[in-house]
Picture 1 (cartoon, rainbow, N blue to C red):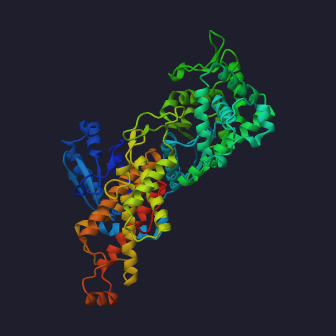
Picture 2 (cartoon, rainbow, N blue to C red):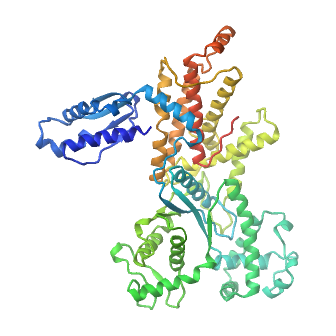
Picture 3 (cartoon, one colour):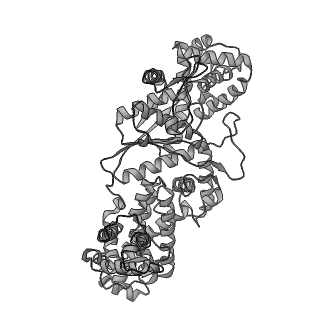
Length: 610
């Protein structure tokens, strides 16, 4: 049940009696003794109406609003108590019977609990990750990928149709360097004086990744680093730039080399993406649309959207948007990235007709994207308001310096995942899992550790990954939450073996402190998911799951869930299962379900045993 919506509607109805519409907060107090919800409506409203009424303070107004609220029959079916506190806050306490019904709802709806149909008519397009096909995927791609996939999962859970896409920047000088690196440095006999024509007729003389005993993306990454260093030589730079010219002229031999080196990189990157559980619904290949960007420039010139700069370059005219102008076509006629981005954005909107489009891209592209969105509006491709840049903070490794692909000192995603997996294996070395089980579970826990450590931070916060804390089974970590889920499942399985279960309706219940806290926390999950999705902040789900796990473990450590104290009592309970045991098992099952649903949204698996 959407308690927040019901309370909000009740307050809004009262505001009409004051002929006033104003925004007010309805939030969860940090201290449960202050209620399940608290509103500042009287504090906000009082300055607007105090000259028109006899109320002497916001608290007097709050008392008046409280009297009207308690006369609302539908509201008081779910609210146990309304009280005024402090200078004029209004606190709401949900009826425990209503929360028990919510418990039944959680255990009945299972995997769909927390999902809504808030935006079921909406289509949102989300671009994420887009790794350049000249190297293996490294740490710079990881936060982008984990953030993009989590947001996509959350939006789908809210009933939004989500299209995930990426851009394959498969042309240009970086790709030409990769081609040069393979041509010059991958010959089986280490010869470096062959040209493209010779390669084309003698391709079997060049190493494959299998020959080199390396993953294909790592193999090509090493060649790219060598080529980048070689590019410093002016003569070599000239040859590499000629590759770009020949490629744009669609020379057959150049394109054959181009396809070969890209296929090697794609093959390796797909291994990483599969491991991450990542996917796209569509991949836009740059070579298929880059030429069409110039037509938008021609169109913009005719409409007066663009202007000719002093040196003959074509530039934007963005004064109305209060952002700097940028060049779209250089004086020599060369197109820049913004021109092909315009073409791609038109393709996106013509193909999928999204209500909103999002770009999960690093902060260094912020101005360029804002310029592109503004030009899209000028060209009537889409409104600027329909385009959102979801930037994120930088990610590094604790105690590591700055990384660079060209320098070859990056940390690869798979290496980081292996570090986490192996760290988990060491922690679980004394477990009773067989080797295959241990390998599988360590992968799930290690992956969860990495993803959670990224997502628990605010999206805009810079972070340094700390392996030790990320794989810890204690504290605010993925493994701690996964372990709590496994603990819940273990209790439920033990209950089945001794014929303990829960059933509704649960009556004659007497809630202790720990049960009350857990019960009054579980129902918040749908609200948290909605806020995380609509505000683009998945870390809220992490915070909620961690607090839920803490509340459950406090409950678990203080009380016997299955209620077994002696063999005699075990026999008696089989004949007449107590409402206490039923309630506690229901709380355990509900906790497990909410933890699972939340972790799934974050792209984290839930081992049933740890």
